[in-house]
Amino acid sequence: MVEPEQGNFAKHGLDMEAYQTYKCKDRVARILMLRSMRNDIILHFERHRLAQYVWDAVKIQYGGTSTRIHQLTLKFDGYKKCQNQTMR
Image 1: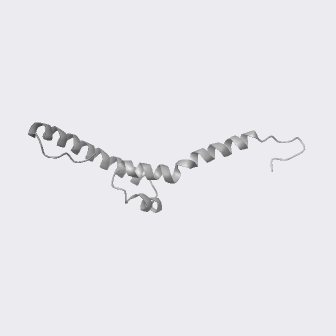
Image 2: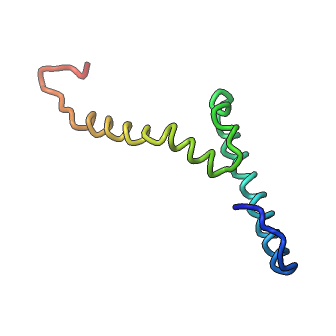
Image 3: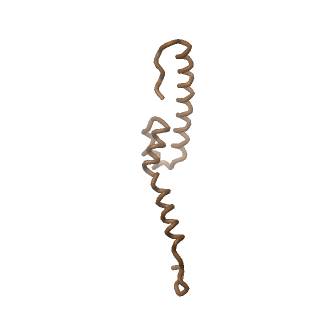
């Protein structure tokens, strides 16, 4: 969201109020995301100014991880132990 331009006083007042609310919520969301990370990971994401940018960067960095884990779990579940073999 971009800061609203000067215009009609009533409309500008409402736009500024909405912008300030958005900015406050965005700041809180960004801080919550960064505080939930380990210190070494924060360094990669603290440069992003908006919560949406932090979220997008995290998805790019770690988004494929859950898909890979799911694939490996399915592969593991598909294995069957032969009677003459141990689990090792």
